[in-house]
Length: 235
Ligand code: PXP
View 1 (cartoon, rainbow, N blue to C red):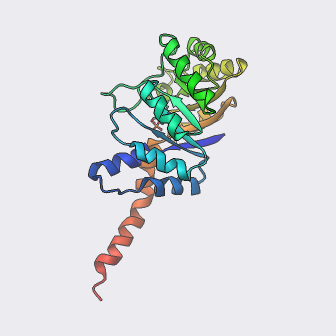
View 2 (view 1 turned 135 degrees about the vertical axis):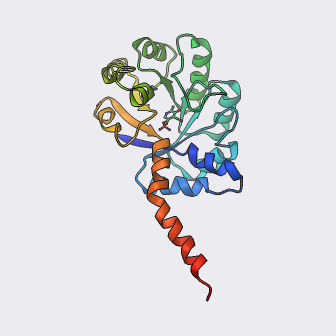
View 3 (view 1 turned 180 degrees about the vertical axis):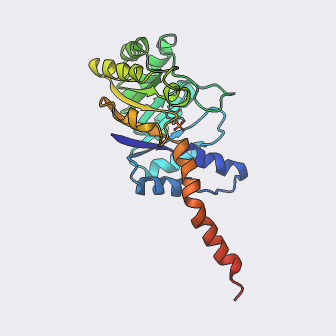
């Protein structure tokens, strides 16, 4: 199982002051030193966290870069220019706090197929972020996507009664049967990731918020210690 780490929320913190702190490229390097297999960023239409130049800079230092983006002509042009290794097409609503549901591939087949075709023709692997539902997996196959990323948020955040683990397992098995490679992610934390990690068809998990949040807890002592040293030194 590979781990892709989404560092959007490092940029969220930076955008509070816009003075370059925390440094996104430095954060990406730390994430890779920690054992991540790749870096994921979501360039949103409203540019609320990740900026265009972040993606360009990361491209220069990250060998496995996954760009999450909406299925629009503007974003496809951007991706063709930057050439990430992977693009994950996601639905996007301006007012949402995070990606709320999966892409409705069935209702947007023409537009998604055109995006998949342009990106894959340029050698970029394309994944579709979908809810773990068989008809969406079938639609992903019709539009020619190599990968799907199964949305684990329903299960992880709202629990078994909202999206049972077996639905994720069934969607993963079915996708693999159709020859589609399977990733998954959203809402995964230390306390819920293991059940998902046991699904053998899933190749990669994309995890963001919980890792960035945890980094604050486990890193705060060190950050305070460094500042305290300077504050206390009057020599
Ligand atoms: N996968 C996709 C497609 C996403 O949009 C997100 C959130 O940006 C994630 C994974 C990571 O979700 P989380 O931040 O809840 O770990």
